[in-house]
Image 1 (cartoon, helix red, strand yellow):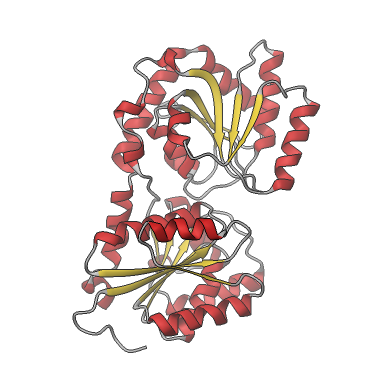
Image 2 (tube, helix red, strand yellow):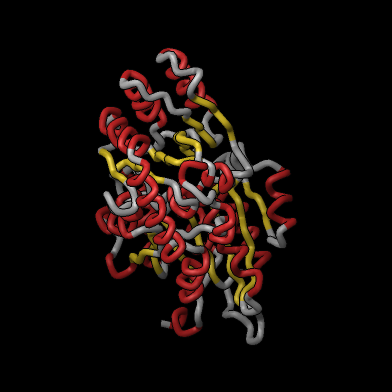
Length: 373
């Protein structure tokens, strides 16, 4: 592919799953941030998944984004269709997000001679088989940098054999403008003494431990409402519903599905819980912090980089229902502690986890001096 013509904006293509996961949201946010940059032109390419509905694609286009969709049927077909997009649009830079999409995205970009290719890893624990790892590492000579969405994810890349000098960390950010001071109740007691977990139903998330912790709280005489927001796997959601029914918690647990008013729900709730098996950089947790919730999270990579135990929230061992119940009980019964943790967490989110800071770090990678180095 020839060098970028003089005077033309730098063309940047982001390739990511169309499942509208956290990886999708980060790619969308980066494209949105670039809209007002006259030196950039962006294209978002989604690998079709069940959640890649025409309504969602049109909603992105309505925000001024260029969006195309490629097949998810066979990896070879995904690469072939993406190569056609690259050949027609002629990007100068490709960011390939998430496992295993970063393999297919980089394969297509290398085949079409894209001069600058970046790999973005969104989780500390992915399903790398020996073959997939060989494929990923074989693309390293053609990759300017492998970006972990947290320091923990960057470290996991190094542990898998990616060259440390090529691995950098750029933490994910959130839209802080969705969490203005006016959104927050004036008094802590104006928030409902309830628990909210916002997370899609997926293998990495651990709704079951949170539901079992709620059953333990009930045995101790505490019966807070638990709100579970998020879509995802219907099979896993049915399993969670069966567990709720089996433990006699149907009057306490509310399955909300995908919600459009998450900031308002967070601001109206005292406690946020993230029960999970592994993470990269948990955006929902950061949003809960920005909303001033008292947060409890599983002590795994990604979460422990966001929550400082006893300062901005509480950490508990993963898949430990008793420890999670203890932490939830502490926050529900000690209003002063919960309020303090929520206030400090909000300050941290506002200072360290905004879109603007994330965008500045990605934009720096696209400066001419950086690309020429």
